[in-house]
Image (cartoon, rainbow, N blue to C red; front, top):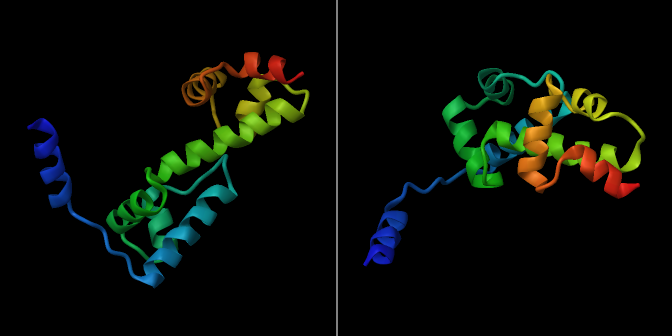
Length: 127
């Protein structure tokens, strides 16, 4: 019975229909967002740069990427960090800084949450 209720609510959920030009703007917003990991634009600034309102930008990111605008940013930062940890001989703090995290402790927590292993442990395992 609960499964039936969930199915009904999901079918009634508001669907997002995006026009082709809106899709292009959302993908362009992603490019802008990932250009400068240390200093990304605010949500409102990003929306202004691509010519969408912030509501449409948020909805579009959920529709296209399955996460929030800054979820895309965080995921990209962590993937880049994983690559740096595996390929370069630098400290975890330096990796955190390079990918745009202000605090190594926050970076370590986010890395462990995403990959299930701490960054230092991952780095040692790659050596």
